[in-house]
Amino acid sequence: MTASRGPRLTPALVDRFSQRDLARRLGIGMPFVTVDATGRPHPMLVSYLEIRAYDAGTIGLVIQAASRSARNMAERGTATLIAVEPDTIVYVKLRSLDGPLPVAGGEPFGLGYFLLAVDEVLEDAAADWEGGMRITQAITYRPTPTLEEPWAKVTLAALETPRARA
Image (cartoon, rainbow, N blue to C red; front, side, top):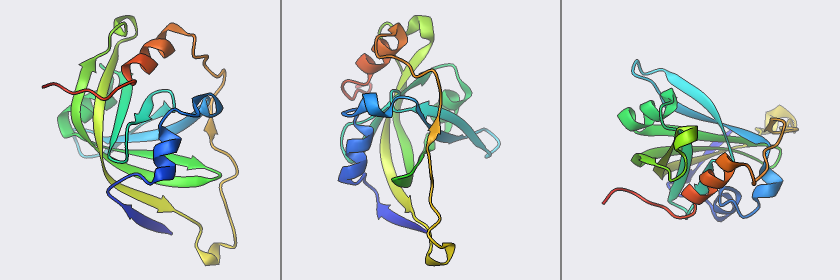
């Protein structure tokens, strides 16, 4: 059963997406769904390394600037970030404020930065009739990146502070 939590991240979600506990969340993937030119959903996976909540209303995102997802964000300006883990199932509806912006040092990796506004947060939980069914594990990938890899350092630096064109 899905319930709206309003137009802002809860304190727990700000903490989850803030990168404060990044080492523990490395290796977890989250679907990030944009809308393509024909109105169809276009999914990709992002990691906790590529997103950062600055506060309850804004999130930074670093992805490949020439990707279809980046093009969809630039052209239609909407996306949904989906976290499906044993302790939470949440759909964060987002709107692009700016991007893709250049990422200093990200040129070899083709990276671009987006500043996103939170439009709505939906939280999902099992209904009573589902008999306590639950998510047993997150989407994971291996090998887990280290924070010392050049692309990871550039991504973290780009997400350090929110930015947009003046």
